[in-house]
Length: 315
Image 1 (cartoon, rainbow, N blue to C red):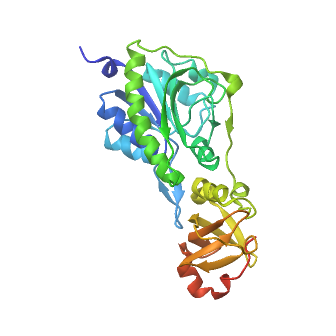
Image 2 (tube, rainbow, N blue to C red):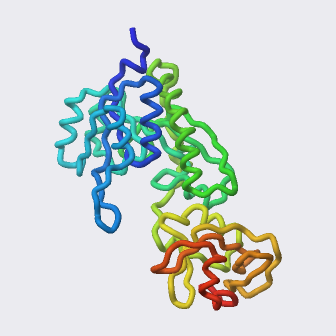
Image 3 (cartoon, rainbow, N blue to C red):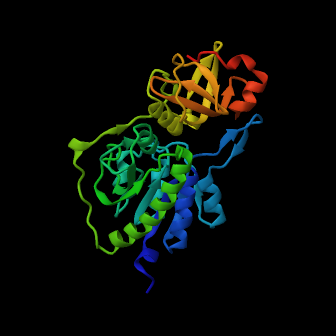
């Protein structure tokens, strides 16, 4: 007889690269993935060419049937799902809310991987929130889905450190690898009856909000560590930014400067080979920046064409 993990019929829901990584790991571990559900292809680039999501590309490489419903609310895909007769569904960063009737349509339920130690940081941006708050560790939670976001019973959790110099994009890759491997171990235990779902303590729940462009605006009166953590968390998406000469200036990469700086808050200076900005406490050394309408470049390259940047005040 095949191992337990090879008998269960699994439908996978996921869209970005972190989902693709998990899908590859599940297939390598021998799980019987009978379908992959992703977001529809989206136009990208200046030409607007339709581009498939990473999970779709991976599913096709693995010869797994792909489904891309535009909505889950019209009942059409729910009927398709029932026809597939899955024993359980796995969800990794799919990007759509499941109507309650979906969660009741699968015998062993929908299993989600969330990148925090639930009930802490429920919601859309747990790792970005952890970085912004200066947390030294977070973790991965494997839990069952319920109608309320990230509130379902927990199957298992694993603590994982957050290095103080990693940006969100790199940390997500690390957590993605750890989470995929942890999911494999947890699924095997769950399917064999070794672990039972445990209810969350809802009184301890905190929310990780969806960050917007406004959240990325830098307040230079804050301590440098707070600003640095904001850049690490939001630098690429939705972006951290300030204004210079009335134009938006994105701060994509930076680090706390070690040298003392007693300039006015927000003033740009050149010290020991670094382009630094004075903050409420300490200075931030700019690495990669981008003026509105321009390309991303090093701060040193930027001042070659913008000599008046030094001595100016960012707002």
